[in-house]
Length: 319
Image: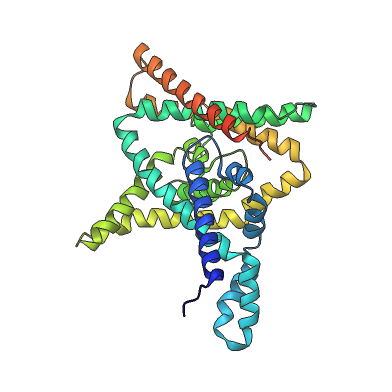
């Protein structure tokens, strides 16, 4: 006589649904425009996401690692439940899946069609700044000051006037801390931060090279081909983990205590980032009349795509 384990079916469906959330969130964060945090808001799991991320503390991690001892297993089990890993793990796998797929496409298009790719990104960023800025009010001099500060900082970084201290590995680690923190914030995309820091194309190509080298390794490829880009990815992820437990908490605290000012600053940061993708076009092509026209056309296409998405989902809100 057969029987059904409906609880297992439900669990599997729940895991698949969360994985789908991760796919959507990863796709949003891999492209400048709509942020992963905004997707989480639209799909209704933002509160759970924030609760799970803020539950990732060193104390709970130590409790989980101590679960190999029988007298500490109850404490480890409780810590696992509090961190909501049954939610974070499938969500993270879904995000990684999207990012890997999109990174390969971006890496290829950055070499073959930079005008189309970065023109499209320019339109996405500009339209997202408009869409998110509609709900903000500049009710005081403080709001104006926050807007000017955010836009000016982004413009200075995009123009390479303000540079990060150090270079190489330090920049990759810092980019990971900032970008992955931005992934959980509504309104600002992690990929936008990477574009602003000049690391987007490089990290996309490194991720694509790593995935390709791992696939080749199965067929007898070189281990060095895996370790070189792999070191970059590990460093970026390490920065991201640090960012999740530090910078993301700082921004969340700022949103809690000075919500309007913080949102004005974040959206202005997006607005000031509009010219950032254009530097990638300028590195590959001279700014002729044809280049400007093609860039404008692709930017218009990107803006239309963003506004169409905004219409379909019923509008974006930075918080």
